Length: 322
Image 1 (cartoon, rainbow, N blue to C red):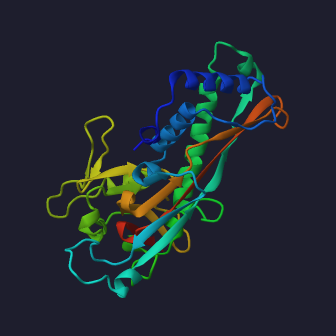
Image 2 (cartoon, helix red, strand yellow):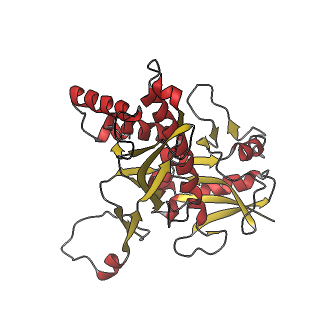
Image 3 (cartoon, helix red, strand yellow):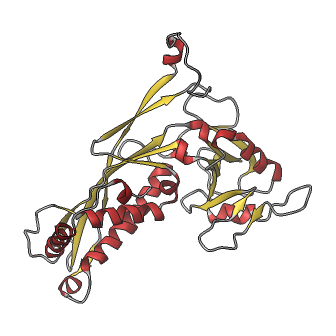
């Protein structure tokens, strides 16, 4: 869901006035040291566009908050949290399976630079230029953080958690041994990874991989029918499929030869809407700095965002080892 769907629309006159003030600020008709909130219509457009450019964010659950922390209630019990009403009270062991995950919001910045001549050119919509620069820079940082973030100064990344192909421990992602580093060619391992995801998460599940990993998987055939597992889409905007589930290309995912801690994680099969929670403040601030990047004017835009896994059972990984 886009942020613009969750927030009330602003009156046209008020929104127009805010944009005029913003343009005046960008062009230098205000105190350069004064920080300013980017108008709602523009900040909403930036956030919506980032979501379309950031594959992990587009697949995950996003909640907009005005606080610096989002608390998520997690039920670790494997059974469904529904049933029939009886006269019995809730047992203590049922309450023990419920826990809370706190997702802290961290400050993300972008620093677009603009030439003085562009700010003085009345034929150029400088607010659109700044908006595009902020969007591209923030989208790149967000997507990397949702995969590799340390959870201290940025969101906690999916691939920073332990991934086990053996016995599972709490807060560990379950994986399938896909073979040796540098190659994905085993048909049965791809099928095993798909079958590892519980059926209740299959509706909404996607394959997430880099183009490098995709180039390997495209050549794999069903051992019985000799048909390719990968099916190319024939419609623009519709993703290719692998074993019937959409493939999302995310170039921040590791290549099949990229090894960390003795293993490579080039492919995820997951329902990130159930597995990964993002919390975000819907406001973006900007500060103009005409001094430190001469002959350019630098703008320092910031917003707050966080993320973490809330359901490890909804995320599975293909593991390549040395």
